[in-house]
Amino acid sequence: MRMLLDTASLWYRAYFGMPDSLRSPSGMPVHLIRGVLDMTSRLMTNYQPTELVFCLDSDWRPSWRVELIPSYKEHRVETGEGEELVEESMSEQIPILLEILAAFGFAITGAANYEADDVIATLCVDDTIVVTGDRDLFQLVDDKLMIRVAYLAKGVSSHDLVDESYIQNKYGIPGRRYGLFALLRGDASDGLPGVKGIGEKSAAILVNKCESLSDLIRVSRDGDADIKPAIIAKLSSGVDYLERAFPVVSCARNVPLPKLDCKIPKESDLEHILSMKKEFGLGASVDRLIAALGK
Image (tube, rainbow, N blue to C red):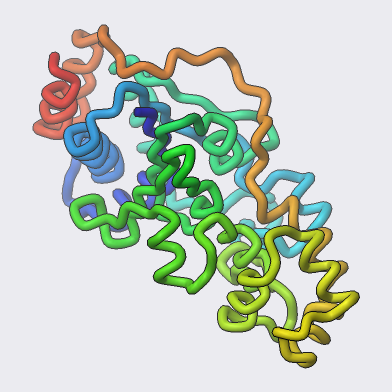
């Protein structure tokens, strides 16, 4: 089984969920690092994956998405810099985290002008678990291919394992149509307004009748006896948005990636790992990951 980690999602959860009193001997906060190491060891112990990849946002706001929807993640941009707002104590921990993960031998990858979501979608194979706190990746769920999402909104210890029935029960839509549902509804946290006047209920009505963007456009033009004219009217007024937003909301699935060895590492640079453990005071977090790897 392949496990694909939305790495930034993990480090944000660790940073805001772990006490910043966890510090290195020099006084540097290390709660982000320790949190991600602990989450990784717990996930590995729970699921016993044979492959694992840490997927990165090489570009958290790709230009091609912004060209289509200029408001995309605009509210997260630091004034005048074009950089995502990140606290200093977070940014100083990320390189150290990536260094120790590399020392363990884990595959770590991203791609220029693409987000981690796109990398994850590209790397999905039969029998994959995607680990994230982001609902956007529900669009990848596929029971036939055994692609599921370990959704960390409630934390690792009580996370939801999302399959098609989970999506059906929660949103009242076919489990394979979450992407279309999200397209219509929008997502304010990503600067995506959705179709004006279409909320979750109307989006669910439309998605239960439509399997694709072309179906939505057809219904907007020709109507449907089972859908109220008021909903059709709102849909019709939003066709231009739908056509522009569809590739923004959808994960790219053909990202050019370097050749990866995704297998759980058999060899690690233990000397370097133990040196970093001492330098940064990573303690039992390192020990637990070593144990999860069976070293």
